[in-house]
Length: 236
Ligand SMILES: NC(=O)c1ccc[n+]([C@@H]2O[C@H](COP(=O)([O-])OP(=O)(O)OC[C@H]3O[C@@H](n4cnc5c(N)ncnc54)[C@H](OP(=O)(O)O)[C@@H]3O)[C@@H](O)[C@H]2O)c1
Figure (cartoon, rainbow, N blue to C red):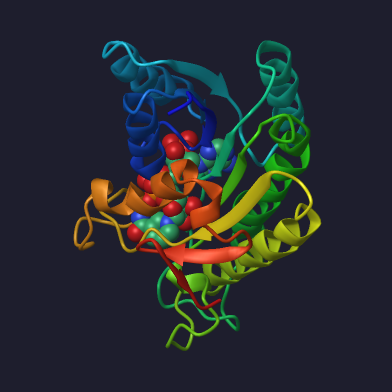
């Protein structure tokens, strides 16, 4: 298999770190984008010590100037990007919050990172993805973003942000339908990470299975503009 260049946001811990390790172990180059200096450096060194082909970059995806600088650096160092994984995300809300009781500052913070950050990463990196023979954008969504999810609304801001990320996937896939870039939303399931908590049923390995598969599977086996979980298309 041809070596791919992948860029992963939120690569210092959780699913982002596990995907960085997996994609690099499978022989790909991984640009690990982290917000936190110390944790980013420690995570990068762990993979470097295994002789994996990883590169460390810093960006807070809330900050448009960080994303522009990241794009300038990456595009001056690499002639193409094959895989963009918009993994960085937050859920800062308490479980019992409702739209009536939510804190609008927390709502804005969640939307700025989960939605605006994802849109900015797509906006700036599409030109570099267009240089790939097989570009992929993988947007991290959630079952909580599924409109058919059977609930009255735990974590409303987080859910709304992920429903909107699904809209980004659908719109972008249509805009890019005449290019070689495929766009997907992925629900990793409920995974043991800092966000998922210790009682989550899935391991990191199980959580990264579908996004890694979406990143590397030949295009004829996939459908752009769809929402995937456990290697299957699921309802929006
Ligand atoms: N775990 C689950 O059960 C689950 C289920 C469904 C969907 N997801 C989604 O999967 C993705 C990864 O989740 P996770 O469980 O691995 O979460 P996590 O362990 O909390 O890690 C989140 C990552 O996002 C980064 N991040 C947050 N805000 C950022 C910002 N402004 N700029 C750059 N990086 C930022 C964090 O960096 P710092 O270290 O600097 O904070 C961290 O690396 C998220 O999009 C999440 O919504 C997770």
